[in-house]
Length: 157
Image 1 (tube, rainbow, N blue to C red):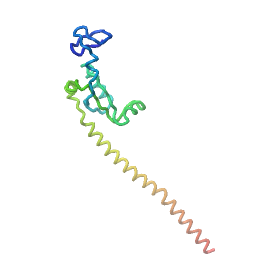
Image 2 (cartoon, rainbow, N blue to C red; image 1 turned 90 degrees about the vertical axis):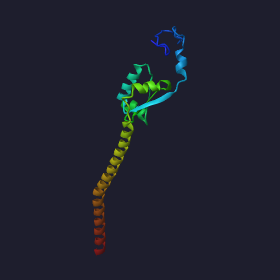
Image 3 (cartoon, one colour; image 1 turned 60 degrees about the vertical axis):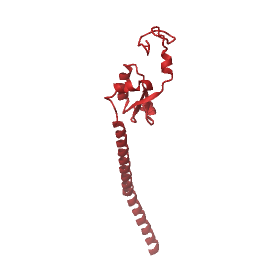
Image 4 (tube, helix red, strand yellow; image 1 turned 90 degrees about the horizontal axis):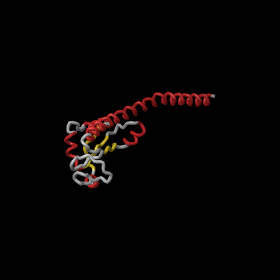
């Protein structure tokens, strides 16, 4: 059952006008923009924040970073993090409710992940070159020896 945003009275009125204070719930919510609340590392944390805010009647918008939305659909999870947004008029209240759950570590974790990815890619390139050298140098050496043997045989006769 909807609640009036002004007087917090529950009502079952299809036109959206509170019978107690006659305010329209649609008018207050219609032109409000979203404001950034915080970033969280995964869906579990986002769901915890969402349930906390829903218990105080604060709507939440989740925006997945990078291709996280597609990853969520395809694989059931996203590793890129989620940005959480609330209506701008409820931002201070939402910050107060979630002040113990600030996730500055997400940015640090992303930087660490890029460093790890760079290290992994560098090691992978080194391993590839080593394997190429191990397999192709003996083959090239064998081809050269065969070529020299054929030339010597042709010359000698």
